[in-house]
Length: 252
Figure 1 (cartoon, rainbow, N blue to C red):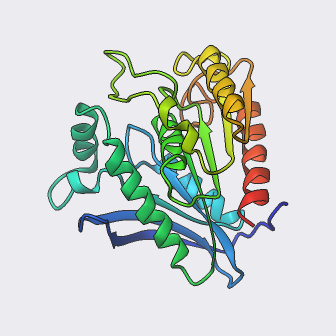
Figure 2 (figure 1 turned 135 degrees about the vertical axis):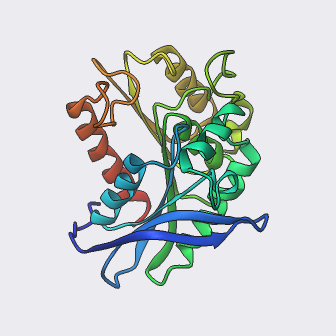
């Protein structure tokens, strides 16, 4: 099911309390009409809460969804601390710990469900480290209706030394996957490789979990990112179509 597009959206910064009492900065983008709609939590990648991810949020709003990007580095930020310094501090520790990430996405999903136009359904999406984290939260009992992993590595293996991440395999969590999973990957990617994607697919097949994976020839990591030489427009456009069809089915 495709949702009607709109050019009338409202977007900007919001704040709400996390489960541990911390104040979370987030970017909210919503259509300017009163129709009930699903929500999307966008998990930003390891470099941080950046313009590219906020642009993704506006794209979802144009396509009829309430979308929120929680700044996962809010606790490291604050008055007098530059966003890039907060991001650097988290990266130096290998990223956000899994349990904190789960809690923050759960809070973001609850925030979306509390909006006046919410229909109660929430999906999650992430790119790179956020792709892995989308799988993580879909296995964490957050009552999500759909999850999208865009080239997220370290789902079926631990992150190696020197990768910049401290991530453990999610294989043991996969039996708890509670919603359909969409995956978009590049054939030339090294993290994850096509072989690792195939391992994930085999594990999901064994568990009887619903998923839909596609690997794009000629594309590597970060093929969605229009500001990088890795951008592959044909792959990105097709993947966007798959995402909107997927969310149209599961969040409407």
